Image (cartoon, rainbow, N blue to C red):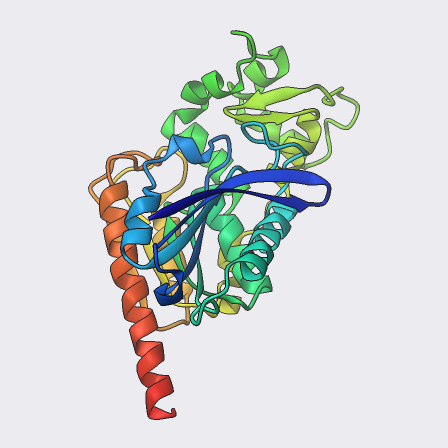
Length: 297
């Protein structure tokens, strides 16, 4: 395995990441980009770059804009563009016979970002999606149904304290509904805050991203790549049935849904299994494509 530190620039934000690749790049099967969830970073996960490289894939990992030292203000649109810029970087710097085989591996909001990018960027050919947040606003509402609205307060603490407005908002879902309906326009919400490893200078902009989030279910018919989807037995962040609904709406073939034994959204007790199933699925996809090419169909 070869491991390299890489840097690429997207809209004046410098991204620092890592590339893991096989020793013999010329025999590499394809490239995969990992997109982590909102408030996390690549080190939060047990994603094993050596596992991908040992099975013939190049893997790029990086921290999202505004996360864990990456500069800039996080938005969904920026994150989609940043992912595409990351793919551009790989395309320029890693040349091998099968470098057109590009896939994505995304978790949570990272999975939403990956799917929005796949609709826009046709170079993405296959994907693995883990406990997808199909819509940030639907996820936020689920926090209150599952009780995660209390647990998540720790993510918003800065220097051991949580901003009084956020404290109150996480006790009352109707505050978010009022905001979404434009009833809090005169409330000063332009304060800096954190959400896990995300740093933001403007809470109003962060809440706007949640309130106006696209819903991947509404555009599922625009997804044209084969997908493997994972979800657990319980999920405090996102309703399980949303992954099931996405699977049913997908018109692509082959597609696969795996229900793991995990009882939380983060899924860190299942990442080895997820990687194994992801590699098997990607291998199957690429083998089928090669057989089609060889037969001339």
